[in-house]
Length: 509
Picture (tube, rainbow, N blue to C red):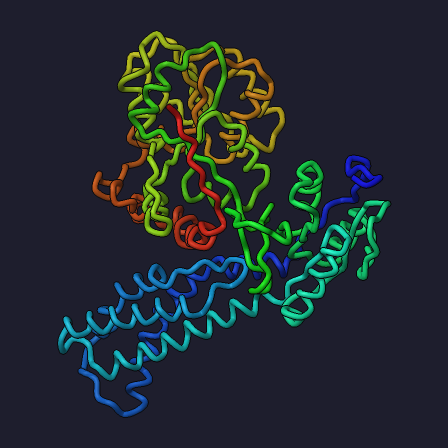
């Protein structure tokens, strides 16, 4: 590497993102929720505005019929207006087209409703909604702020890059400097390096670094591989510039400079196996007890956790099988990306395993669930080798309780299946720890609330709601106090995070 090996770099502690930066990012990810609130608030405001202007509205008792009429449009709006706030911000013309389409649909719906919707109210509602949505987009763009940029690699190409950035994006990009660890130079440079990786890491602890551009020849693959893990911990995004050929992961820096993305802290990989329920039943039937693997079943809540928690991402990376649990997520991916993904819901999988695969003499381990639930399963399926352990609430924070749980499972190994029903991320932590210790044999499945459904502790949604992907709504209605935060506060984040998720399907023969 020109007289310097990156493996010799002693890096200081990696930077911690500022709270303000994290909140700005979170606010941008919740844009569909803000759209929903804007459209919802515009309806009563339009009624009040029309009344204040002296225009006549039909006399009505209680909630006006025209505001109730607007509710489906309020729900449709965030989906129709949905546009990822990626790097860089998407062009406003795309938003304008979506907004015009929304207005056209609203006008058509009002025409079909006849006298139910007063024309003056409809015009006031659309005007307030458009004003609010446009103001919201402007605010989201301001939240991005001025982006900070560091360049790694000094040389003539970097000099040209710096000149281009200052000429085209001087008001949108703050250049923090050029950094390079090479001790030899083949040509004079106009922009000298401020230091190397150590100095860049120290700078990143003082202020956030949005971008790091790697300005080295694309042919220097070994050097780029060495740089990537180090730079990924320093800045939010790492890109190669200039990019001479079209790339799968391209981006425009400051809306003018084309770069090739190497890593992006705002994008998270989620690998899924292409098994539906029927195909994976065959896999589970034939796995045996000579080796160990574990199965995770991502849903919307897990996808959010994958973005928030690096440790949880590691649990998923080590899993043997990653099966999509959420039909809602599958429908959303089909709507936004045009991809169809197989679904293998954990609750359906657990029921089919008990009904079709597990034999009376199979060695089975259940972690979680009550003693009554374990007894019900033992009696219903005639299980003769069924071991049950229910760790205490919050056991994952108690090393002794975790050790007792792991030792119990290992004592009953080899097993046909080990069902981990202690909630996420506890069940994934236990599954991965069993793999790390290397003593267990068999297939462990992270099944969440499946035991509750199977034993009647909770009722599942009707089949049509499951197929439509709205099982979450049924669970919310069944237990509103327990599920409200998960589905109404935390859940809407998925609309923003989905655009920052690299979903890859692992195809099996």
